[in-house]
Length: 276
Image 1 (cartoon, rainbow, N blue to C red):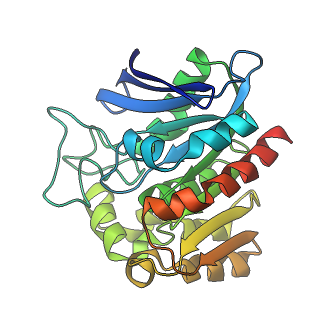
Image 2 (image 1 turned 90 degrees about the horizontal axis):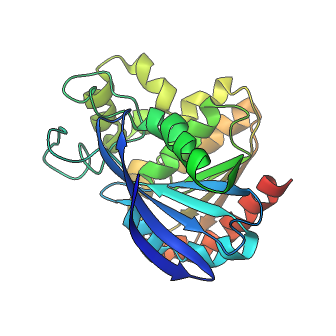
């Protein structure tokens, strides 16, 4: 593991690392924000999963999250959104291939040899973080859009592993919208039954843990009705009796201006659960 960036930030340090990933078969980058409390005691970790086209840079440069992480004593970890590099398959367009890993473990050629972002986020990355940084095993997870989808599915599939989960404008039912249908068809094949393992709306029916879901959604999001469709998750949560706080924010779009406006509330939400 090698540190490639090191910046003083709100009394702590915003760093970026790269490492050879066994899971993904390539060099991966991830960002770590260590608040000023780091080193005094093991700190809880909030994992952030970004959306389509993003790298680890979008969240750390646009969300303004470090201020709140420093206030609450929470470490922030933000990985890249897909494997990258020479020999890693890619596709034309922004919604498949590099920058569009969709946080699944691909089973189809040519993707299966590298595109295992679910396993990377759930297992390899936390193991690396917990072995090399002054953190505890108290974990939370959040994300935006494609990353919001990833955060919800990872939390729902791993009861007891995360203290809390939240999302901004998540793709809640990827099996039912164009972004998800394209990605799942390529990565997972034509059997839609296999897609359900990565679909938050489908997972709610059999969730073994009633971890409350916190979701903020912009009312003027250009993808609201075509790709995001939060009402589908709301209906599934009501049917399953699963706790969900879905907050529609009038006037806000899909951008990081929206995330920056409410990231403080999300980090405070996670901090309460992580310190409980």
